[in-house]
Image 1: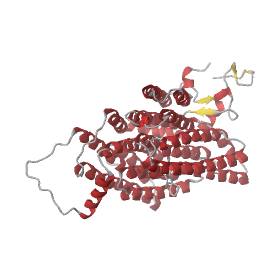
Image 2 (image 1 turned 120 degrees about the vertical axis):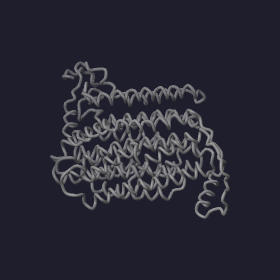
Image 3 (image 1 turned 90 degrees about the horizontal axis):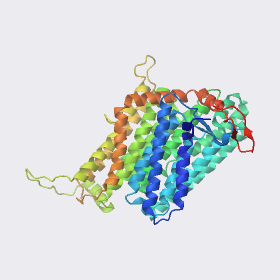
Image 4 (image 1 turned 180 degrees about the vertical axis):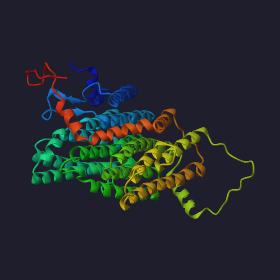
Length: 545
């Protein structure tokens, strides 16, 4: 018999999947009951993610490969947990807890089946993080995308419907590329199991390997659309800006899921052998273009939602660029940046709704006009006069300042630590060798300029919103809405305080990814459980762990 903790590997998929099915049987008028069931499932999911993360962080007490149906790889479906997937599972669960609590204030009640779609989104994300074969990666991606279609349209409205239809069309095209790429890979390699693929690719004939690489390139286009690489990213700022606040906050993890798959497949399938380094130049220059495009978008945007959308592109461009550099030391800092930027952008999307609640579009346009041309009047303030800032604005302003510091990479928060780790690794700090090349210096300059652009944009909008607001009204904010924002920002503070252990974990994770043989051997060693029916009516007598 295997240990009970071994079954926790499948729990991140089963919990939201079963919860989504249960919620479908509850009438929409039972909103409180549905909210409690959904919240309980997400909290349990977060606890499971914490346990998996803790087990993965310490000495492994169980085999980290789960055989569904008790069929051995590569013929059966396998789920694999390692340092990277455990980290992403925990990040997804924490973001889900915050966004779901935020939605309970009002958004979960403005349309049908919100909680079911939210749970299916989590099932798709977690399945994509855990699966060990490309076909089920496609299946879980489709589950995730189907749920995201409904969530993006949740709340109706002409702008949301228009952006949602564009989002659906783009992702259907991405799904087609995904299917074509998977078909080409299976036709040439004869398997879709990731570990088996990594084992077969070095042994393939050059002509077959070229066709397989063509399939991998087509497959990569699908992931790059989801990651938001330029020029495939034109849909992202509009779609994220149109989504409701909790949905946009949860969508912050979707682009990182594309980065996760690219990093996983690049280092596992093309980390060693004749195809080593396949596609890294595309990722490098594509990441640079995305970073430039996102930085220009951040500077040009006046609306907070657009700034947040382009900030997603800035983070995606930075991460793609680092994957293209293909250096382990730089990648360690990038993983910390991935966590910090995801938490920050998730909090930012929710904060935007609270900040803009007391404003209207006309006032924003007038404020921009006055900023550009002036209003010809100067308010005279007598000495000793002043207006006390309401506590709500103090809290929102503090959260806004924290988001600005994190996005721009200013000290002392985790955004600075992550960028410092990446930049110091790029420059080869503490190492004896050749100085950085012109290309590396270009990357360093782009990362610094993107931070300066975020600082300028956030400062400009912050002054207009909190210091020179034309309305002078204080938004009505519920505790259940501001607490999730503060929770995500406190997590970034925790990353700052525990930066040392966090970086050690990232270093260990990257070293593990850089050794594909560890992943291959873990899948190969996974054996079926003795005395368990494998589904064909016969009892399997193979040895088990």
